[in-house]
Length: 410
Ligand SMILES: [Zn+2]
Image (cartoon, rainbow, N blue to C red; front, side):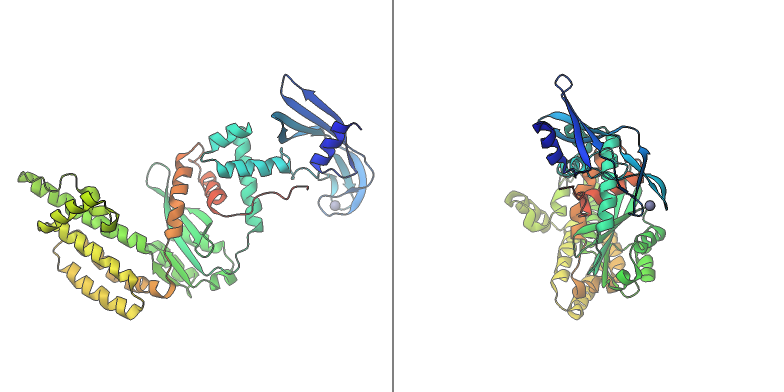
């Protein structure tokens, strides 16, 4: 055996049963083909592990390996088939690749790293010199491998979220582990059934460990949580709540702006963004603008003050004090004569227990919301997302914190 052959033997981590017969260097095609053959002898059944004799050889096939200095590197071998007294004739496992894979383990490991680092699949596919289908297969196998290895021990705080999907008003429901900052599972739609399906991915033991579920004030999620994790407390997520309040302010602004414009008053023109930001996030000029508008006795200004004041709710330590604050805030909001604000106030009052449970668990879906931009970029990138299964795989691949790298041969 020459040095090059020995080099590839070492590189592939081959045991004594395999030898490198030939290394074909195709300079024009920028390709290296490594021909391997098996020494024969006793074989191990891939199904049951018992030693057996060789039946024949499977047809010659190829595996894509890591490139060697920009040369596409291919392994070619006819794998022996063993005759097992229990399982019949089976193709033995090879040390460099997983079952049914067209890639070596090292190539898959590399591909996973590239895919994780790339913002979009097309770019990764280009770098790897693979077609979309092959990339999809690697992602699918990586997620399955990761889910098999995943431990759900010690999980006490979870989040139930919705994400838009597709072009219309389709949604998916997402179960997240707030303790370990990861997405656990994704189901189509945002119904009770969708939520039930997510709970069913956990064992009874795992469900009984859950102390709180953070979610929007969404009845389907609440009903499903009450049924599937009756011991857990529902915590209504504060980011969803401030979003409702922000939208209420915006509704007040829009209708007031229309009324003012009818009288030729342009005070609210171009002010939409001003009311949406928290005061501390505005630069000085915009803050001055906001304060000036605040002094001119507008409905929008009142709505904004009520929204801003609600932020104090979250800094209380004791639920009792927070509840007293809420009651004062509520009666103020309800007497505001601002319909959109009154509507949100009533919704919050109806969900008060789930607001107050925040002070026992201090959880929000902020982590899940942090995945928002990631999930958004998954949604908008590349092809194949008309299909829910692909969308789910990509979310788990990027946000599941799964251990997806195959155990390489060395
Ligand atoms: Zn067997």
